[in-house]
Length: 335
Image (tube, rainbow, N blue to C red; front, side, top):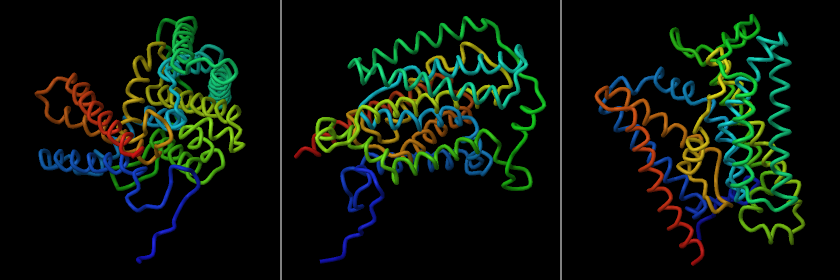
């Protein structure tokens, strides 16, 4: 018998790579990305360039950051619909703090991150303590945050501060003409942190265990209650960070920012191979799922003669396919 590879990072989702069914959704995502990217490159030679690839990271940085937090929520068997409204609230709130109240940007960023963590933890507390359905609880959070954003300001607030200029000007050069800007760097750092959390931490193992079977997790002595609260707190931190990145990217805050973004985030996570039933999912898959959405958007732009609404049509079609595949994977996993 051939020796089996025993590499196994922590987490129930990271098992021996012998074409385990756990990996099939993510493998499918990677294959789909390679096919779509290859087709786009053959259709438009300029598509295969470092500049275009970096633009994938830049234009989808704030959505990707939020999607990383959402990955853990969906792996645990939950959902967070408040993330789009959190972006709108944090963007206008941070701009208000910096411009209207003249608070230093670094202090404003810290305040916003603490708010995101507290609000996420509060939602997790309600879901855990009172048994609220995550869909309904976070839907209430969606309305609350969007309304709060309107209370702060109905108009866009510009951000003009030397520290903000210095932060956004920071970039790592990749070539003479191309650099990796601050927003993309934040996204990549968050991605690496989520990889460590998912694969090499007790928290990651607990998240997978809860999503796989919550009752079994309780019997195993896993702290389900505290883990659930931390999961939503993590999502709150990621969505508030996404709002900060959006504000820095646009140099402004806007109450309507992030409208409908929660749907795009969920789509990216599902396309990335995270099972809606919980227990299976990888930050790597979500990262590739975000790239797929970037490829679709950029390809539509390159075509020139296609309406931007084709982006939604293609993403919707992909979602149908991946949900169907998830249903097949789910049935075969129980055989």
